[in-house]
Length: 539
Image 1 (cartoon, one colour):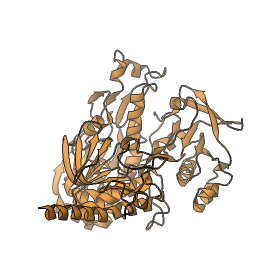
Image 2: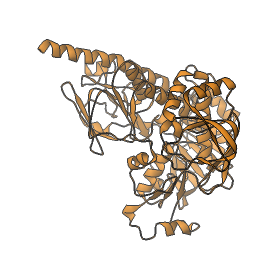
Image 3: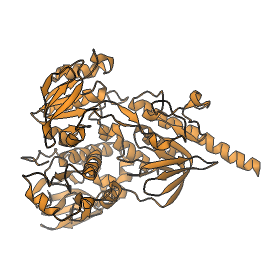
Image 4: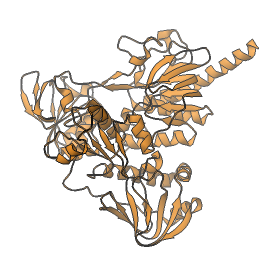
């Protein structure tokens, strides 16, 4: 995704004297000379740095200056919190006096100082969004659009908000990409270059994640009190409350921490945030809270089987590990529904998307864009893209958009000149080499669009469960009265619970999912207590 010019970096806020003093309490003051390197792109670990005097330039891999920071500014972005390796190189440009804080110590500071935490987290998120739009930064993925492995890695990187450059060796305008993979078998594609120069051939998402430093490696067998499968709002809610109440808690997700909520551009109806909050920020804060209390998030690990047991339930993972847990929460949510049209996969990741983030908005500026769907996610994406300069039309199949979308979003669509077409369903896609030109509606009308964003609802991610727990005809997990349990969130297996979108009858709202996740912890405590009492009684 080459771009003609890099975006303007977000303004870097200054730390107040009291905040600098707070940072100094946890760190060490040092000095550096002009041209000294504080850390390099690809370094496994780098510290949080607050500048007292002097200037530091942040450079990309080619030595281009991205941004310069001065007195009272600070260095770092989301990789400081996720454990990811450095995306930029920091070079001193004026004699420097600075405070260096280890990233683990920084996390404790974020937990203890709310105003400073607000400042740093908001800045880290803004910087990551800006870095996602800088051409040539981050991962370089070289593989053809026809490669399923390439598409999977691209989706994984985008869902985890990793800056990346995708080079398609099948494109005639990039002969260098073809030269890079010349002689490689299809099984060795894509070629992935990490920041710092390390190359990987056809890595799995897990191998890539751990190479970047953001994935926790699990032992062949783990034993925990509470295993949470799925790290969306429900799973993270359970992780925060479970770990804070003394349960040894492990959280797994097959993709990215935050689930679909983490990809939402703005959640405006979440209690306590009258101005709204981005999904990245909301779920990022939740992950921080979970880590604060000792929960262990691990991605990407895909669960493939649940084996209920007496006292311990076992979850088996795709890579061969097994996790034994006294209690299990199934919070796997749901996955995007796809359009039932021929050739859809040819456009996915190129001109058809399932989320609207900064790279997609940059790509779509001044283009004709269709957003398909009638829910709040579709409305939020349409507004976001329109504000970025795209000419947006929202297509939905009902007679009245207000049947499925909140009134405030309908008003926002009008405010930002998003065209809305009722009773409109797509029957076909038209274009070449993955670039969309137009769509045909079921009515036969043909409309010119360069990009398509699909928000068609989701289906529960429960196929892997087989008959381990009871599900309804659509695959959603049955709980409570439906399976003769006195506990609202307990499945047909005692000690196994379901919360959030994956649960039959749940309210498909972020706040409701968080509440269910928190509620599960009380049920888990009661279940473990009953187990222990039964063991004591038997002895």
